[in-house]
Length: 155
Image (cartoon, rainbow, N blue to C red; front, side):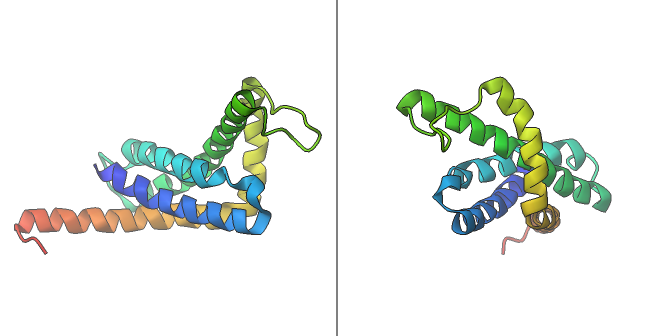
């Protein structure tokens, strides 16, 4: 349950970042409105469960935010590439500017690494602090909920 708080909060920041990218770069990036929040949600949950669930410290909280924000870029590109493949096979669309189909699934796994490096340079200044801030806010929400539950007061 605690990891879901971080996942949802970080997914919100992923959606906001994707919306900014779509506004700045155009509708060619509209698939990010799905893949960025999904990637943020999934990496956030996993990072919180592995790093924070059993041993809470500020270093672990910062690490969960940092690691999930970096890994979410890779997962976002991977999901976007898979989305383009699905679009191509179902509709024949989603080709590049020359009409070529998207890269195959093997190339998606490797190509996502280079795209991750690019996107970290372009949007990492937003996503890395957002991941860390999301982790801090999540910890504050969790602590407040625990205090309310221990005191028996419902506000």
